[in-house]
Length: 497
Ligand SMILES: *[C@@H]1O[C@H](CO)[C@@H](O)[C@H](O)[C@H]1NC(C)=O
Image (cartoon, rainbow, N blue to C red; front, side, top):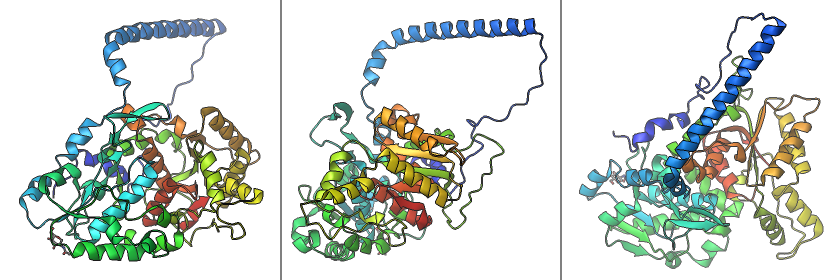
């Protein structure tokens, strides 16, 4: 059996391993012999150290200034976003392609109508469903880039910021979704890239989603499990090894069904067992980002107990003591108001019946209208104020009986607002144990390539936190909860505003 990605070894961290607490970054206690100096001796020593420091800084400045001059061209060039060429070329040459190109029994399913031009949460849920359908029909799942802007060159624009128009999926995700190992007994063909699909399938059978999806399947109350079965039947009826869903069509599963827990949760018995979920991996790039930021979520003391207090979960890679909270700001100010107006329900995988915090769509307000009470209720649960966040965090922390020590704030909020929030949370602990660390998405040290996939780094952190407080309407929270449920985290560990 060959390894699909040369970097696969690095995925070990998510392979059910205990965190590398002996990470070389963790400072170890240093034992120094006591030094006795006279007053004059001290003054002299202080002067000497200060002088050395000043000289050191000056030297460093001089060197880096020289370097900056020499690298001037390179620097201005590298201020453009990365294009992940190494990932691209690796995914165009996965080890199984050669064999697949020779074999005639491999079947493929490509969803050319794949989700795009949206946040990663929305895209990821579509990719999960399409990988499920491919697996259920014994076809190779054809994976796509994460595309922000299909009509631009390599770069496009997000709120005035230059970003890559597309990111190769292997820079974000690992595992079966992008051609990685399937469980040993699984005979389904592995995933391939869309350009490999073009090579082996120049003339695929094309299916129009609109011909199969009825209005009831899209807007009505047909359960997601029935939609899946309809599609399995449709695809299984085709002999052609090459099938694609027409690109100018809507996705099979549209927003309406994801936002309807009754319909969507019926897919769980299928989704929770499909390898793309049971063997979910993040890319080595994402996994490395967590590794190099571990200091934010783990104790630096050698004497700190490494065992978690919650034993009911058998999720092996939980980061004990970590509380992750998902606080959407920015565009969510308007979005939450919009959700109130249309009495929107939570995203499906935020609504498992086993979860402690629930949401019922208010039945006393009409569709398209709202009351001040209704709007306030939506705001508290969707766009909570600092006071409301502090209150919830304190409550969840006391529910965990003192076992939560590190707080990680996943947010797109402004720096000053995040600082205010951090201070308020720490202030609220007066009398009880202060947090060992409070960090936010803004505090992650990321490489240039990691910066543009930072949302996935946040998701990976949240996926391994002891407890997560999420936003019920967010697909990012919902996907993380789906992964946590597959990994058998205790349902009590999923909380909501
Ligand atoms: C799935 O397809 C592969 C060939 O691509 C075949 O070897 C295998 O037997 C098939 N599995 C099932 C369950 O039909």
